[in-house]
Length: 437
Image 1: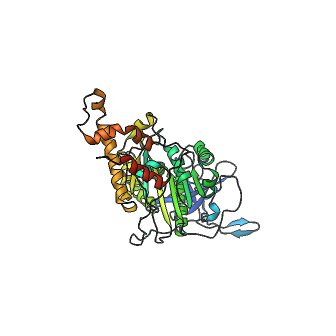
Image 2: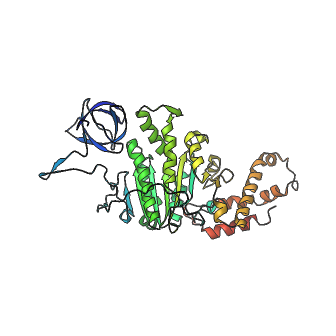
Image 3: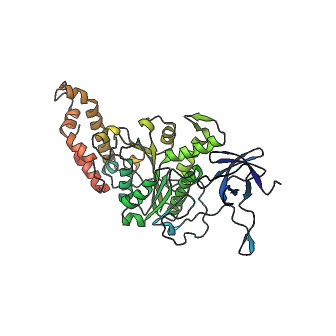
């Protein structure tokens, strides 16, 4: 049996190496701070031989070499009697979270007070793939371009790929306000802390706020807190799904989650394999994505939208590549469209919804394919038209695209405050491409 305490051997960033205290991964410990005898909470993230690796849950505080490390399960004197704290405190999950903003550890950030605790709820385990309810119903996102050309099904996992400054946050706010869901779970992971308040106050109206749970872990929190926020939000969404609710999970962003995993892995000494990312990152991405999707109960659904940041608009980013392989579709935002004032800047050509044929009619799918073909034809012939080298009548499809280009652009654009319901979006698409070769 190991000792009842350990000593701090090394601190590399937020990762602490401890001697003399064997622990189970996920268990908590308290680290002696260097100021005012403060005790800092940490969690075991791994071990190697006699060394245990911990990571602080909150912002790094001053520590001294050889600092005392005590397991959280050690009895403490409280009000004249000894109590043994829970080794893995349960996170609040339930309807009491609706309308609230919490961090990755379930602590309220909105200052509204109240008791968020409830009955202990364990996160649901992996769903048997043969028991998952099939995706057969379209989700009304309220965004015309997505409803018409990239129809999403209830239970689908889709990625929103975008560089910086191309309207990702605006599109997310449109989805948050307009999507037809009983419960909305929003995870803001690794983003600027300023954006957390702006998203909650400006992008969520009163009706959307009442049905929403926001889990926030800004960029100034520890890497462990950021990973826990993403996983906690996924567990909350899964719980509501299992209660028979139609849930939409928005995780902004999956890239920041991967970066937090990279920070943890490199701090533990794992070798990088792709642009600084350890192999463990690419095994954790499918785990969190597979938490979403439909469960065994057909009454509920969990649709997930994951944002992915393309550094320098590089579509071959390793995290983006790995995500495309496990998601059910992807929506690309184009910098060229954004620079031209086209919002939302969805690149219809490069985007795809893999479940669209399962949740819409054959006529709708054919119309969406025609729209893609018209956009592709016009884009690839732009230089010829600019030089005056194209002769009308040579290509009937291109002629149709040229004649209706203004209508196509107007159809794909939408103001942030505008709502376009699914049936109206579909009928407008059918009208737009009617007569196209």
